[in-house]
Image 1 (cartoon, one colour):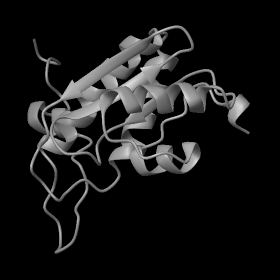
Image 2: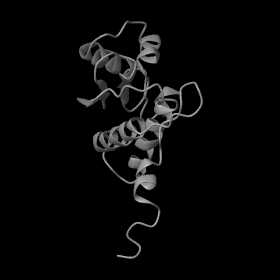
Image 3: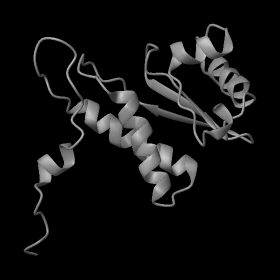
Length: 144
């Protein structure tokens, strides 16, 4: 099924399972992306959210590597970030953006959603997917 994927987005534990290797550095993320790419997807984005330090992701499109980094946000409310990120990438691609630009925009979106995550209940809460709409309102600009 991997050859049918335009973009495969494994997190670090998933990438380790797919490659059978421990991943602990950006160079190892690149090696994993290249190894997974050889399994058939058109591109691979290894997501480093499970690592310490800044949240670094590595994209390999078969020709070159791209790195996307964002400040790690101290919150337990990160439920759904992987699905949000993948969906945002798909949406950006549907708008016709090139893959590196789609990933850059999607990373910015998910980082904002994490930064403004909702503290709901006692466990890991969700990210705030609609923070920009919440902050600006649904009708901003209609009367301008």
